[in-house]
Image 1 (cartoon, each protein chain N blue to C red):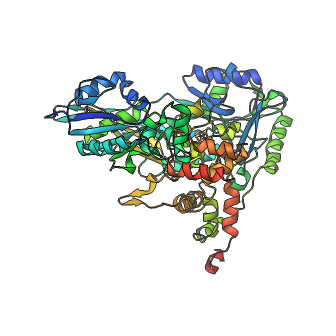
Image 2 (spheres, each protein chain N blue to C red):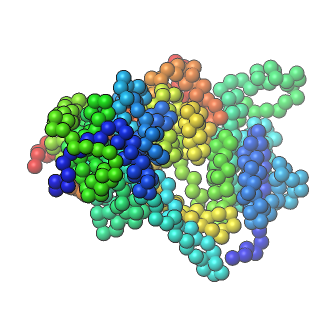
Image 3 (cartoon, each protein chain N blue to C red):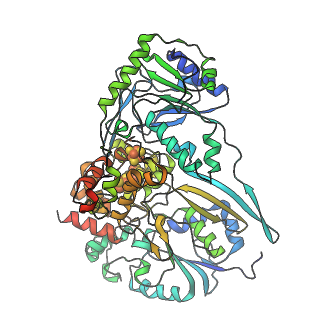
Length: 260
Length: 379
Ligand code: SF4
Ligand code: SF4
Ligand code: SF4
């Protein structure tokens, strides 16, 4: 069934590393199919040509860390019929949310020779703290399979198949013996949302929590289990404070162990 | 079960390897023990030479450690993280593909008939687990064709248990440590990997006939039986089942459910490791062009929120309600549905729970806890 007009897709980037946008370019085989189905109206990572909004679908990568971006995201929202945030930065504040528990101005003094020219916010926050978001796609970076699923679902007008259960489900389906049970390797999988395909345990590493908290994360219980496997309080703070440090369940758990 | 067509036979290590090779030669995809990822899993066995020897493991709640034995036994371990449902009831199964054609669409069925499977090293608890799944997936008016296609022709080589693991409790559930039926061949491994073989079917006898074997001596048969009898007393766990169903069903409001929810991660490992859990979800996806669609069936779990989602929300929102669902279904309401418990005592859910939650301990605590007076009455 030929569509009358191709939907316009735009990709915007705020404070982030570009890795999630790269996942879209990384789609290689499917990229041509995507280009055939949507008009790529603005995607600076791929092309300097920019088509003005409004857009049917906007993908937003990155978190809000500056007063300028805090303004800009409202313009982006106004231009977007459907807004999807992609990646840990956009959905949880990203690794740069490490500043949230510290003094960002102190960091700035260490890094920049003239920090007085910087305009930065005290906290790195996810997009959903600023504007309404239609769908959040997790991951650091997002999985290209899930990104294509979100695009395909949008184009078909259906709900994307993006489960919110734990990484453990993917381990078990994949047939990876649990690294925590079989080796005593600390793993964040039980409190982390599936999506990566349980890559790390398949390579005998524990999960780092790239996809953020699963639907009902019992971080307190996992912290006790990690403790049994030899992770001390500073280790627990670090475990919960990485790419998704700003996600509430992880933030709260890290704060608890900071106080002990 | 009727009597085996032949008396017990005996097989040595070479005979076992030859048996595997005979199954391969007969066109079976042979699945058996393999050491992978720090555990003894079940995987494809290409030839008899590949079978691991001299491995064992140490199991406790939330803990599994692979180890070496001081002999070269083939089956010197209990059950590991894999269960046979991985092959009979696969975790990810394509049901069909569809593609647009003009104004309609065409459906291509998924993969044709799968290769016949031979399951090597099926423990008595797992034989019982397969029988549980048979009842669920084949027993009703709507048999699952995907399961039937894998199960019906599967050749089963059982291995009787002489050294139960730290989380085993088949003796409590009445499923082991010795199986009397449900296999084509059943091995009991003796000293120096001399096997006593019970023949459970004519095709078992026929296959055994293709490899070097001899009649088992009376003392070998007696020793094999004594070893499995002794295993009964070596279970790592026990569970008192008398009155358990009634006690659990009367304990819906037990405070223990909240207590265990404080530990439970809702991670779903227990259900996915369990050899009888059969629940699946269906995922429909389309490709970017909208020209092709696929329907997949995947393992699901009562620990996920989506599992009990009906319009408006999930019915079992709290972790305590999800744990209660899991435990009471296994040990109580399965009786109402299928006339037997859904647990065979394999211990996988105990070992593979990252939080180390022990189903036998929870069931005991819930059952003996404060329950309303009317519930204490037994039938
Ligand atoms: S390895 Fe980690 S993610 Fe996988 S089952 Fe174990 S705890 Fe869960
Ligand atoms: S409930 Fe646990 S012990 Fe019982 S069959 Fe399932 S995994 Fe095995
Ligand atoms: S009982 Fe254990 S394995 Fe099962 S969901 Fe809870 S924490 Fe996970």
